[in-house]
Every structure is written in structure tokens, then in C-alpha cells.
Amino acid sequence: MHYSEFGLSNTKTLLKRAMRDGYAVPAFNFYNMETLMAILRAAEITQSPIILAVSESALKYMTGDILMGMIRGAKYKRGQIALHLDHGHSFEICKYACDLGFSSVMFDGSNLPLDKNISESKRIAQHVHKFNVSLETELGVLSGIEDENTKSKSHLYTDPNIVKDFVKQTDTDSLAISIGTSHGAYKRKSANESLRFDILEQIANNIPNTPLVLHGASSIPQKYVNTINKFGGDIKNARGISPSQIRRAISMHIAKVNVDSDSRLAFTSAVRKAMANNPENFDPRQYLATGMDEITKNCIDEIQNIMGSGYKIN
Ligand code: G3H
Ligand code: 13P
Ligand code: ZN
Image 1: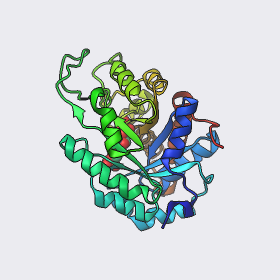
Image 2: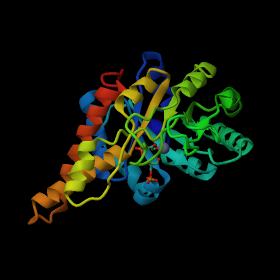
Image 3: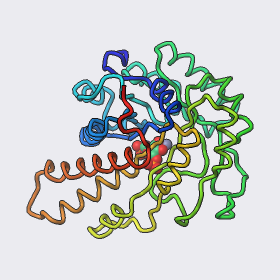
Image 4: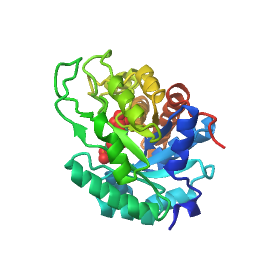
């Protein structure tokens, strides 16, 4: 089915407006009814456009049919929501998402040799563009630049010198870049470790009309880490990217910001707390509802205080 029948928007449209008006559209990952409903509620309350992101493993977990059944049944403002495949690793999965009714796909060829990343990205662009589905790609990371803060080579950065050619050759609609973020809850060695804004600036100068995407952008709110650890968890030393750094990146052409770990932490902290405080309860709806509420709260907070996307709908 085509995404227009679900009232979805593609990301090209959403990100173009974000670039023009200087905010970022949040891409929040979901994997079940609770996470989907929580994110949509936050979008409704804040009147924010949002991107519903589904990883390959989340798609497998929900199955395509159940996922699209939920999308069909969910209430949202037509034209303000995109359904996006996050980190698709093959032509086939991108095509499948397109067939299901996704309005946007990411092809992540960042681990491929550059020429293969270009040829696959281009092939996928040609296919999805036939349906007006948007494509996000990720440019192969540049190894060997020494991280000034850690003096290590553990971070791999996008090479600003090849982005223009990559975008031209692939016809991608947006580009995920690497400036020091990483996935998960253990991103930084210290709180003052900085993203590579110098690299971001060069990339933005070289491709000023291409919306840039920041993956691994969770801020890892310490209140959730503390609650999880207090109620039996063990996620010590979890640390994210500070909201001020993400805001700065948004002011420098980042138009899509990906957040998954923060929602996982919000949900898990609320569920752990509810279970500990209500040992007699064994109705999952009771603790799942608390998890859902906490994701909504956190998404609202990030939309208002980081993304700047509240009240940016037509
Ligand atoms: O970028 C990765 C996302 O956080 C999704 O991760 O494959 O565990 O769903 P996942
Ligand atoms: P986090 O792990 O920082 O939430 O990143 C999520 C992400 O990039 C999804 O693609
Ligand atoms: Zn990612």
C-alpha cells in the first residue's frame, strides 16, 4: 500500500521545512503499541511533526502486518508524521518497507566500501523515488582522525571532502553523518567531551541544501539511570550527549535527530519503579501504562527543549 493512504508524509517534506525554519524533526524509535502510542501522544500535545522510526529488528519483532495495523488504527494529524525504516541494510528490506506503506527509508551502507555504498544507495534511491518515498543514507566513516578529547581513534568521522560527490551521485534526500555520537547508553567518557562541530561546519558548507541527520543523539537523562539503578538495575556510567550540544548541532543544519535509548530508559525506569512499589500487582497494563506515560513525558521534554519542533505543523 502507498503511504499516502495512511495520511503519512515523507521525510523530504518534513526536513525541508525544518531546514528552512531552523529546528530538527525528532525521529523516535518504537517497537510495540505502547511505544507507538506514547510517541504519538507527545506529538499531539506539542503539535510537533515527528518521524516514527522502525529498525530492522523492530520490524521483525512487530511483523509488518501488525505494525501497519497499528499505524492504520492510530490517530494522528495527516501530513505531519513520517514512518521511517531506520538502518536498513539491504535493497530488499528498503523495498519491503516501501511496499508496506513506509514513507521514508534509511539505507545504511556506512560499513561498505565507498563505491559499493554509492552504487547501492543510488539503486535504492531510484526505486523508492518512484513512489515519492524519501531516502536517508549514511556516508562511510573516515577512520584515523584522532579524537582531540580522548586521544583515541575510537570515534570515526565523516569525511567532509566527499559528501558533495556522494549526495550528487546517490540522489539521497538526507545524509546521516558521524561527528562523535554513538548508539546506546554509554556514549561519552566524560560530560564535557565535545562533538566535532568543526567537521559538521565543513559538511554543512559543502552540502548546504541537504538535510543532515544525527544518529545516536540520546541525552541519557541521569534521573532515569538513577531510578533504574535504585530499583534493581545495573547501568552504571551511562552517559549521553548534552542537550546544549544537540541544540548547537541543530543550529548548524542537523534537521533530523534520532532518539531511541532515552525512550528505553524512560520506559524501563517507570516500569521498574511501578513493579517495586506495587508488588501485589500482576496486571501488565498497570506498569506498561506508567512506562508509556514516561516516554510521552520525555518526548515532550525533548521536543520542547532540544528539537524546537513544537507548534511547527501546518
Ligand atoms: O540505531 C539503532 C536503534 O537504536 C535501533 O536498535 O536494532 O535494537 O532496535 P535495535
Ligand atoms: P540512541 O541510542 O542515542 O538513542 O540513538 C538512536 C538512533 O540513532 C536510532 O537510529
Ligand atoms: Zn541510528
